[in-house]
Length: 436
Image (cartoon, rainbow, N blue to C red; front, side, top):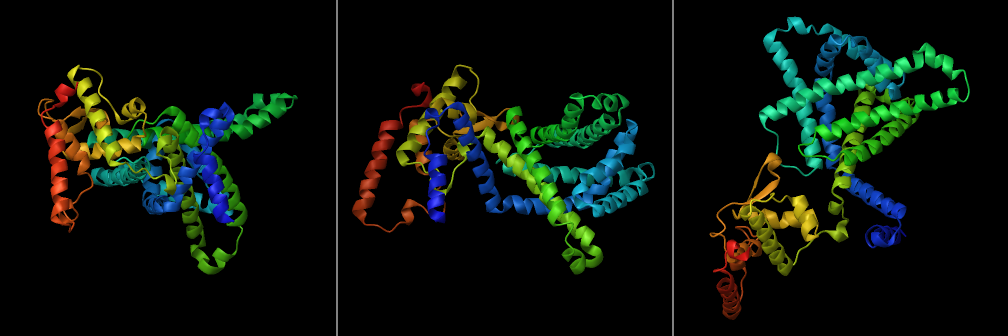
């Protein structure tokens, strides 16, 4: 039964031709594929492990982060909103959330930034920066990014997150509070249908503000260019999950007496850690949804793992080198993986397999911001087609597994040597410059 259901889901998701569907049906299938990719990531277990690591880092950095935020908000005269906002964030924890919020605020009040001294202040900032660095690492892993930011760029980006994110959240809380306490709003709400409209707006406003906050995080944190529509899509999904999980957590976990009976005085801390873990898991899931929305070609199930034949690898390698060399020779805009995928009409993941072998053999190099632009690594006259074909034909070979390690008869080796010689004779005298 389960196998048949899995086959039906695979048929709907992967065997459906989106060009034959109407716009609404095609959008629905695309959305299902995106969520399938995010669920597949969750099943791998890595987002769960990273969420656990972020819980530990958050516990160490929460009080210093709030202390820095308190100092920033104090400059804007909004520091009094810190406790109400924190308690509102911990609302799913019920009465325990109020206790935790008050305890954290008491810790923050005990930190006197002015008397810490230069070393103490540096340690405080370093603790906060380490939290943001770990968040960026988790986001970069979700976006399949191995390149990290430079020290200067990292410091400026982290500082903007530390300063702007709390300001955005607390400004949102202030808007929400003033919305309900305004005398004008209360007077208008007594008049129908304006009262119903205002009541509806009051319910929708927290969702919109949360979506804006998540969008800001998904655009700024990853070390790559995230499209606004992809960030918003992931932010909407994360917000919905956030609100649902809050209701479920409040209804089924906080009211349970099992934690108090088992952990006694540690029950509040355990519940707080579980709630943080759920929140971080939701944040990472939203980042995964944003990633697959921006890169739908990288969504696949196990039956659709990309495997390139030898002929396809050779054709892709020659096509990539020809396009990159042509743009370089004619001083045109350099190619990126994204633009190449659209030009060749193949997925970015398939191109990555070929590009890794070309860069490893020093035929291509990356340059520009975030190393996204492709350029030849040597003069076009020095790169022959024989070098390109040899690079992709020997891709994924290691020192422990090579053709010479295979035990065979002499006649087979002679045939293979003849084939290699024929390919080399046909391509060694043709350079990239001749190809363009």
